[in-house]
Length: 283
Image (cartoon, rainbow, N blue to C red; front, top):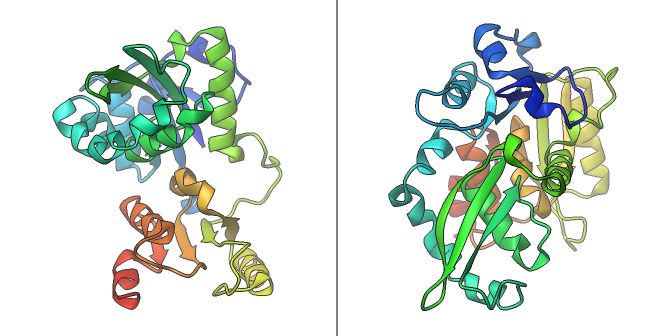
């Protein structure tokens, strides 16, 4: 894991980590790819303007085969509403219901800050998650305006060094939730060659793989140098952390399994069942 900041002082209020590099360090001192180990990069530069440090860090990360957030595609889409507006069409249909129970429901507009798709305003958490899925960016500033109905007037990336003290706590908690591997994995743990996510539903009555089979996946994966982790529907935003996705739920084109497969494929993961297979086999 690599965390990139514009300046060292931008990270001064957070937990010290050897994984934190300045943009200049990342650009000038390439990190060696340890035995083909996948590298997740979180780009927290002050801005992502074209040809700036933030932009180049994401561009270089992709060139190195690293998984970076935000990607160059996300950076480009957030620059113009003509690009990101299409992705908001379906989301805006659900705004009215969500904002009816919101503290700002009686106002004409407000700006919501999102940290890795999380907000402390519970009525808007589902919208926050969907926005992060559409535009994976560490900090998003979303402007809501009321005309005939609620609309998303604008969306842009935020900056770490501009956060208030209360926002810093929210950001830190969201980062910890987004990538538990930064803080919670013991440093002595043997590094796996690959990370495999296995999507399952512990409450499914007739699952494709029972608990014993899932345990076997984990055990055999470990013997092959593969870190196998069981994930659930709620872990959609974490797909970029892995190298592959194995779906062990009953698949269907009209539920989250198909959405998981499409997202994983778009992130460059090896996927079973892949979206095309789900379409064919459930038709």
